[in-house]
Length: 116
Length: 112
Image (tube, rainbow over all chains, first blue to last red; front, side):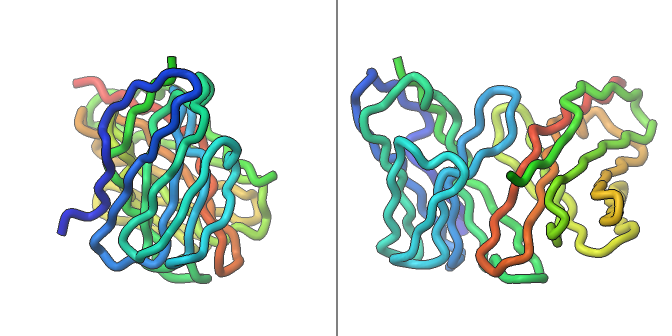
């Protein structure tokens, strides 16, 4: 199993450009998440999904959009990129987020995005 | 606003010593707590989870939880240079759709 994969690894955008960060998992997890991590900071949740067709906002959703048409894929769309979106983006997945039990989130390798 | 607080460090310990990493959380209904290790330039990986008050041991790692004090800690015994990393504490709430709230992380440096 490849686990959680993300593309691209690095990207430089100009202000106002758009792009889609791709995320795929092959563990048949129902829950998927997008985080951003700024230098010296923890992970901030952007959006999450509890299954195909269901998404919800996290702590910092402004400037981003997501969709979840399949269990495996959870792309993150940046419209009108701004310098404040310069960050490292991590996608994660877990098999359950129910009460109790193991909710280990498995993380992808990350996408380092710079907006100039 | 749910918050998870950690001292950013760095916490410096010599090889073979015990490293103690601490975390406090603001949301009293938080049920589960997680410690992730993140090497520089890499993604986080889970090393410990704890749900009940008390201690949980796994090899050189011990997680401690005190819900009354809203306090979680991670002890690393016989610290090795390979333990040098940033340790992220995360808290999960009670609802079925709840997500993780992460602290900013504590950088641990283990010197040979």
